[in-house]
Length: 313
Ligand code: ADE
Image (cartoon, rainbow, N blue to C red; front, side, top):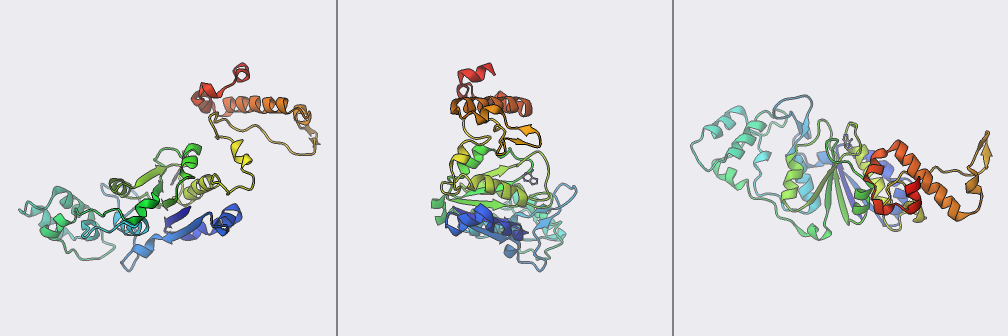
């Protein structure tokens, strides 16, 4: 599986060379590359963000830099002219807004207004009514489409990433993660790549807010890659885990030796050698713990996943 990660802090991903993820790379199962988004900037400050349109605190990641980067990594041809790459000053945008030339669309005028607030890049505007219409030429999917890349953005406001998503994505050939920072990324970035036929996902890893997407990507990557055939030394350990399979229960509690430690004993049944009883005990415990800790999972449980004995617990 090819994995590209784009971040303004690619060093976050140095740790992926450790442990099982490192071994999977050494075996050739995974090819992970962390890219620095700033490598796709053209201004002296390597700026990747701008103030939010409509006001508000913080900064939002700009679509132009992301588009150059993602077009490259997805093997898409860039648009011939992209109006969002021009920074207009107030006079330029006023000229366009006032222009009687009907070929300038409202959309272009709107985005010009938005970008007129950019003071950081200092690039001069070179937009005319003629090239403004050309700006709507879209990139076309390139050869990378045969790898069916999946583009994933971590986002605290997105649907929750689950074991089901991890299982599905463990079969992909190419994952491309985009890590947002600050107040997040311009929402047109995922929207745009959807229009280009790319499978784009946005996921939250939990109901809390992190400083950026890097940790969320690490979490998702670990959940996905460990499900790949050949990743785990003992694949059985995956089958029995929490959130796996139709039942989707929390796992039963685990014990090792000694049978009694600091006055606390392992449940007798686990020492009985009766595998049927051990299985039943563990299943009952999984149901009871799930009911207590995560009743939402019990509510979602498919009745077909329950056996007769489950119904008595
Ligand atoms: N970025 C910031 N917080 C996040 C979260 N909870 N999940 C995914 N991405 C995030």
